[in-house]
Length: 222
Image 1 (cartoon, rainbow, N blue to C red):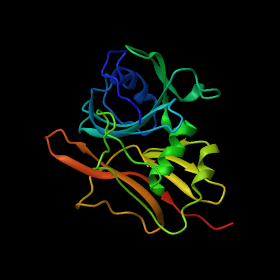
Image 2: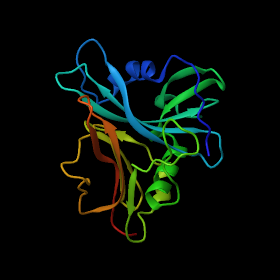
Image 3: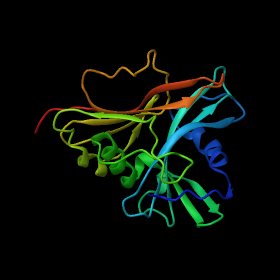
């Protein structure tokens, strides 16, 4: 499992995101730039041990109402070929040196491991503690699975609420960038959902919210 280093990052992740988030179509903060706090998230392990994978939830209080965003990130020790458009920024890590941070929806390693999580082949890890599963993260996968491997080579497309990747068989992987607390104890999934990932984050009032992070919707069989 990946080792989490408690060290100094320059700039910090929140500083990188404060510069990057306003460029996203799903961001709706107020004037003057984001005011961000980390509210939750989890990690996944790269089987090759090369890429850091983190699903971070940040809350922005710059607008009329606080907004929570899901920001999947990957951290690499060298640039990812052909992914200049997905670069969030670079950081100096106190242990690992220079790290390239990418929008994880555009990184095939993160996409593959997210799908492995949905299928039950990977386990969510605590965001801050090494070798510790995150028991708050939920997942499901029904039927024969949604042809998950097909998503790794498709282009991610942003809209006003999230990011989608489409597989050749018509299945869609959707990441909910703008997070909404579920009205009950468990999130409500669309009827066509073939799998999902859900998780928790902290609300500004100190309560704990739960919602959907990602959903796979089925498409026509080929």
